Image (tube, rainbow, N blue to C red; front, side, top):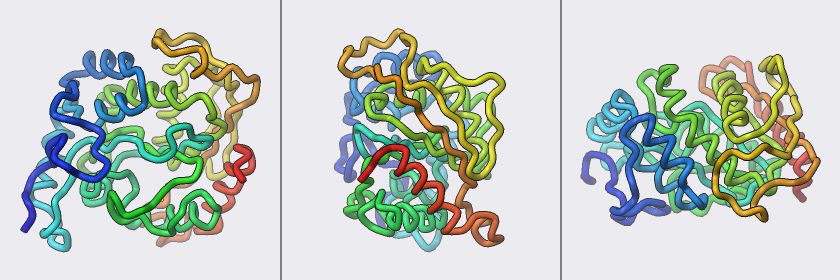
Amino acid sequence: MSQAGPVRPGDGWPGDPATHATPVARDAAQVRALAAGAGTLAELTARQSVCRACPRLVAWREQVAVVRRRSFSGEQYWGRPVPGWGAERPAVLVVGLAPAAHGGNRTGRIFTGDRSGDVLFESLWRCGLATQPTSTAAGDGQCLIGVRMLAAVRCAPPENKPSIAERDTCQPWLAAELDLTAANLRVIVCLGHFAWQAIWRALIGAGHPVPVPRPVFGHGAEAMVPAGREPTGRQTSTSHRQTSTSQILILGCYHPSQQNTFTGRVTGAMLDAVFLRARQHAGLP
């Protein structure tokens, strides 16, 4: 049997962005400071992946990594916050709620190794946004094409329900990732109402003007945000900042959860329509 408990930074997990020297946020103030102080996307993802700011989430994700599901009892679980992954200069961001306890919390990659991901990656592959129709484990060869994928909350929460305080504590990681991927960003796809709500807060945090009142979530809902941003206080080079007058398209999409897919509330064709719209607006070939 593999070692129980979370993976230690720098121990050789495929794609682990952190090392033993990566600074660790232990409260909300430290999350804000470390997110704002990350000068590169690589530095940001490393810091995300070792965060310990939310005691309830830390305890739950690590407990799951020790107890494990019987079908995965022989596997090592990631058991840490799941950072964003995919293109470093994405045209499209796909934002979910949080990692699944035995999905992303096991594999170390959001939407990887669970039923939601099975449906999601099939759609991304059909739409030319992923190189494989499946995403099963870190290091499985899956690559996103012009797409980056991340979660509003980076740790697996009990019952898949993060608290308001946990959402707010994690928000600076999301805002910083928006800031550091802004150069080519054209579309943000929000998988579910929670992600839709979180992205508006993060856009404000990253310096984007947003509509008032905020648009209502729905499958296929669309809203536009100017790509140009106000200064956020981050020490970012002018070459990195988005100066175009183009618009960022915010797209709503029902979450491809088991409940939604089993009941037909969201189908593969419905996901395809959203991602083909995203691909068209982003100008991806």
